[in-house]
Image (cartoon, rainbow, N blue to C red):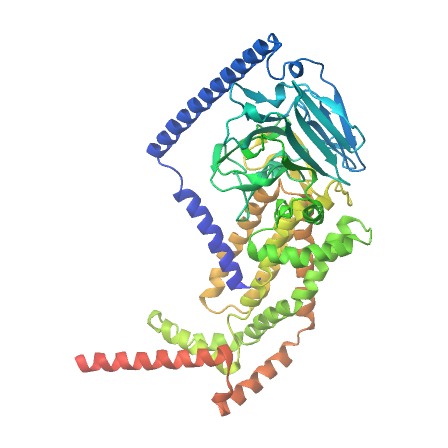
Length: 629
C-alpha cells in the first residue's frame, strides 16, 4: 500500500465521515420525521384494528354458516385438526387438515443455533398461509376449512374440502427429491358460485422469521423479503427499516421469505399479478425473531376446474448450486434466477464471485478438507494470481526509493514558495528521463481491491461455512467472541471478536510496514505529511473494528491471512531487491533516453510532453508580462 493508495483510503474515510455529519437532519427535519413516524404508527394501528375487525366478522360469518346445514362448505367448517407429514432425506413438512397448508418446515442435516439437530424454518406459531376465493355470496377462506387427506404417501397427499352436493376444493402436494414441493389447487363443481369474469385467487402469506444464527445483527443484515419480477431481475425490501404494504407494480415470478442461510419461497406458474403488497418489519434483538414478513398477492384461478392453480414451494438452504438446480427441477419452464437469493455483490464483484470464487471454493471444498484450510488456500491462490501486479507496484516504489537522493538534490534548488511549480516540472522531467512512473505504485495494487470487496460479499453468504469450526473458531459463519457481556455498548455490541481484533492489529502492523518503506522515497514536504498519515492509519483499523466486530469469523480470518501473506510478500521482495543493481538499470535507461528522447514511451513520454507544454506555457506567460511592461 503506497502513499497514493493510502491517500485514497483516507479521503474515502473522510468523505464518509463528512457525509454522515452533513446528512444529519436538522431540528425541523427531526420534528417532521417524528410527525411522520406518529402518522405511520396511527396508520399501523388503524390497519391492525381493521384487520381484527375483518377477522371478527369472518369468524362470525363462519359461526353463522356452521348453523346452516344448506350453506356452502357446511361439512368442511367442522372437524378436528390432524397432521400429515411429507418427508425425504432433506426436509420434513407438516400439513394440517385445518387449512390444508404446510404449517411446519424442518430442514434436515443442519443444526440450529443451540446445537439441536435439524432447523425449524417455521411452525404453526409463526407462519400462516391462506387462500381466499371471492364467491358471489361470501368469501371462502381455506384457513377456515377442514380438509380430508387422501392418497397419502411419504411424498404426496391430496387434501379435499367438501362443499356439499358433489362440490369440493382439492389441494394436491408432491414433495420432490429434496426441498421443492409442487402444489395445485382445483375447484370441482364450483363454477356457478363465482362471477363470470372471476379468475384470480387471493394469497395471504405471513411469517415471523426465526433467528437461526448466533449473531442477531449480522444475520438480520442478510434477512430480506426478496422477490423476482417477471420481466426483470430480483429485488428486495429494506434489510434495516420497516416497509409496510409496499406495492410492487410488476408481475412476480416468486416471493421469498429469506434469512441469512435459509428461505421459504413461493413460485407461481402463472405469475403473481401486479400490485402485490409486501411487508417487512424488523424485530427486536433478544426476541428470537428477525423480521415479520407479509405478502398479499393474486394468481390465476379457474372456477370451472378445467385448469388447476399451480404453485411450487422451496423450503431449504440458500446454496447457490442447489438453487440453480431448482430451476431444472421446476415444472414451470421459467428463468427463475433463484440463485440470486445468495447475494454475491454488485455486477463487477458478482462476476468475480460467480465465475471465479465459487468454482475455486467448490474445488477446494471437494477434497473434504476443513473450511478454514479452504479459506487459506483460496487466499494463497488469489495472492499467486495478483503477485505480478503486487510486484509491479513494489518495483515502482523501489525505483522511487533508489532515486530519492537525486530527488532530494533536485528539490534543494527550488526551496522558495514561488518555485513550487518549477520544482514539480523538474521532478516530472526527472521521472520521464529515468522512465519511472510516480503512479506505478498505486494503480496496479488497486486491482486487488475488487477481490477484497468480492470476498466481503461472498464469505458471509457461503452456507458451506455454517457450523464449521477451525482452530479456536467454533463457527466460521458468525463472530468468534473472546469475551461477551449482556449490555449492548454503542458501536461495539455485546462481545469482542478475536478474529476481528487479529485483522485490525494485522492491518495496523502491515500499514506501518508499508509506511516505513514509503518513507524511504518521500521528498521534501512529503516526509512531514507522512507523520499525519501514520495517525490516520491508526484510526482506520479502529473504524474497521467497529464495522467488522459483528461480522463472520470466516471473513475476518480471510482478511487476516490476506494481510499476513501481503506482509510476507513485501518482506521477501524487499530482501531480494538489489538497490544498486536497480539504480544501475535506471542510469542506463537515463543515458539511453538522453541520447534518444524518442525512445521514451508510455507514461514517461506523456510526462515529458506535459513538462514541455508547461514550460512553453510558462515562457509565453512570461513574454506577455514583459510586453505589458
